[in-house]
Length: 238
Ligand SMILES: [Zn+2]
Image (cartoon, rainbow, N blue to C red; front, side):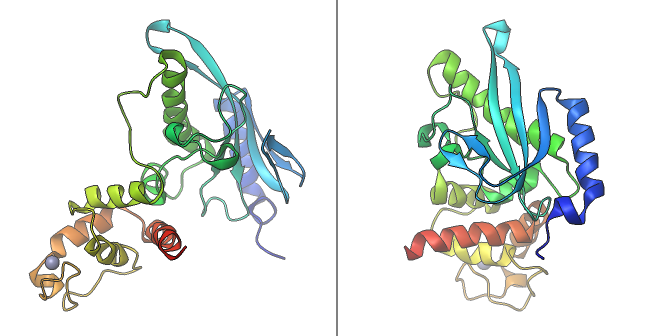
C-alpha cells in the first residue's frame, strides 16, 4: 500500500489537528472521502486530508472585515509535499489568473522554491496558514475592498514567475543560461569546482561564479528546485 501520511504517521496527524484547533477555531483538519466537494468546480477523486473552514481578515484601519472559505489539501506525501490551497468561497472566482487563482480555484502561492523558503522542513499546517495562506488572502481582501491590485507582492505567473524568482535569487538576467544555474541548484550535493560554469565563459566554477552559486544554494532546497525545473520543462515541451 502506498504511503499515506495520515495512516503511516498518525502521531503527526493528531499533532497537526490539535495545533490547528488551538490556533484557528474556524478551521478543521479531517480525512475526507473521494467525492468530497472542495469547491463548486472541484471534487476529490480519492481520499485526502483536508483543512477547511473560514479564515477571517480585517482590512487596514478597520475598513472592512472579510472572511474567506478555504480548503487546503494535504496529500499522501505531506509534509514532504506542501499543502495545495483551494479557494472555496463564493466571493472568489474559480479561475482568474490576474488574482493568482488558477483553474478549479487553486491558489497560486508562489513557485515551489519560494514556498519552501517560507515553509521549511519541520513546519506545520499552522505555519503554512500564517506564512502563505494569510498573505495570499490579504492580497485578495485588498482587491475585494479597493477594487485594484495591491501595491505589493506582484510576481508574474507560471513559467515567467519561476524565471523571475531564480533571476532574483541568482542576480542573473532571465535568459537561457539561467536554466544551467538552476540545474546546479537542483543537485543534492554542491557542484564540484572543476566543472564548467553555466555562464558559458568556458571557465571552471571555482574560477568563475562559485560564490554566487553556493550562496543561492543556501537559500533554496534542491528538491524544490527540481520541481520548478520540471515545471519549466513541461511548459517548454508542450
Ligand atoms: Zn561563470
